[in-house]
Image (cartoon, rainbow, N blue to C red):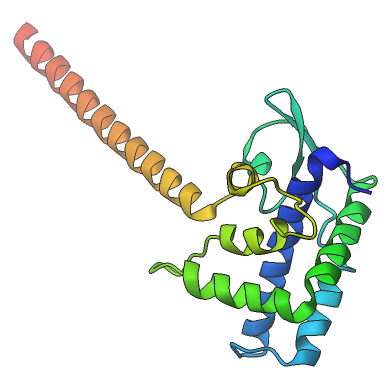
Length: 195
């Protein structure tokens, strides 16, 4: 059983893995509409595989958070205490979410999120899909959208931040090269004057 303070984290991890599995299944079968048998097979495999082996607990700002693919805690430096009960807890959570929502409804939510969050550069934001699975009347794993958004890892934002950091690094490197050339030119000029 997943501790109550980590229900939202666990649901986000599950939604990330389900979304990833459905995306890959559609690519594998070269379709935008999985057959019922392929859908059930994909979800069964997702909720009974080793997809959750790399998840664990990590202290983030003094609070233990679940860390792994799809979770913001995975972007925070720190020591991960993985394995143990967590893979099985997440497998149970996966089965619970799919069981409560229903396979067809999971897929409908995935398709809706895929069409509403696709971006020009081909990246997707899995917040919409996670909302559908984790903020439900039957079982509010996440209290609200803000709670969910604080725990979810959003790759498109990371890409933008990484691009900005890379651009700044290149600018600094360019500036450093210019300064070295200037110093070298001054030194050469002094040496020439001394002669």
